[in-house]
Length: 589
Image (cartoon, rainbow, N blue to C red; front, top):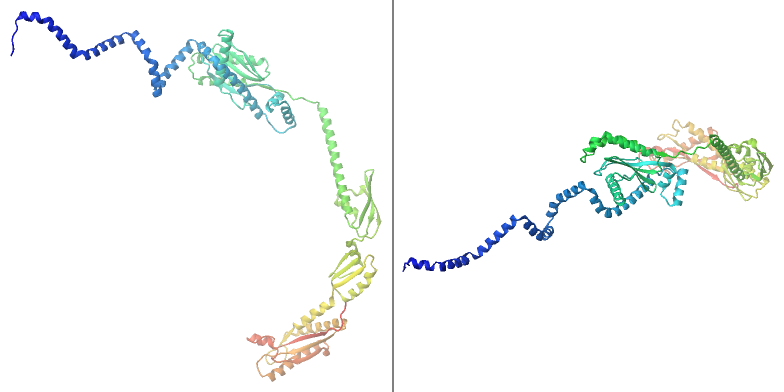
């Protein structure tokens, strides 16, 4: 149910209702109102830059630390800003950074210079080594004695000065525009490193001694090397020089620098880091790569000519003297080892050799031996006494000369015993036994191994006769045609055998045996074989053989020459052969 109030009552209750609404609004909109108020306050802060910077400064360090611990994005973002800041600082006043870096870089610079010098000296040692000449050996000994590298000693003796390396540097930026190295320098120093080192040293000197920007170092000395420096408004010209260079070198460096300066003035003023336009000035740097070597000491020509001639004469005389001495020594040694020669004494007088001693007539001729030794016979005189050497070689030669043996006989002589071997005729054996008793030096004579030649001949003839066969046709008792020459030769062999056997008082009997094949009766074959033996007997006696030497018999087919299997075997059994019987009644020694 609703009741309508009167206007007067409404007016009386209005203040109380406003408060209630306000409370209700706070209850409903309270949390949102607080956030709205915070947003209003934050908006005012953003609009106020001073307040914003103050607030960011409170959280910036922690934010950078948190971000850098997460990844490297903060580093990448700060790189270009940092580079631009450093570049701007250098363009404004480079001395600020120099004053900061000098305490840190100065020890490193000193170390770099020491390392560079050490490396340069070591490389000289490698480049200057040469053949094993007398001068090189002398320098090596000096290096060993002074504990210095060989290259340093060699340079000290052979070089007055040398420009080893040249740098053309942009003065404002410190960048190397051109550099050149001597061909004798093995290790090339980094041009940018050297440029940075020189710039740092010059800045350090200016800051330490209060020098102006136009003041600069003109010379730096380290050991046997120095750096000569020339400058213009835009360029620095630095030369690394070994040794003691003349003052004219500085004039050359200055003129070269001025020439490059004027030729490339536009490139220098507009330099943006590109060094390519300066390559055309390289020939100016090459003209500054100068060096000077020590001149060799010259000795008088006549002095060295005389020394050379004396050395040649002494060498020539020594060579021939030593050669002749060696030849004579070898000749005497060979002469003393020669059988039948005994050298008793030698001497040298007036450039000639005299030899005294004993010589066998069978020994080699000493004068002929001189030619083999390449010695002039006119410079050697011999005086020999004859004697008979007991050397086995000479004893055998004397024995052969006396006994005149056949070629089939060999002699061996040792300690008075003469031993004979081989084959010799019976008469020579008898005669040699008598003659050897009269030979001086022969005490014993042994000829047991000498074979009598005639005995060997008897055995050979006997074997030859028994190997001879005469063949017949079937049932025939006549020797086949064509065997007449064999019959004549057999008769001669029989007569020679008889002669030899009678020489030794031996008797001989020759059996003539006839054979047949197995065809036919035994009685008929016996008759045919006997007639065949008679036929050969009559032919041999006709050729001059003595009849009383022979016996004849026919054995038919009882003693076949071959076992009959073929017709050829039967032909071989139709034959006559001989058997020699020698009665050895006496042996000859």
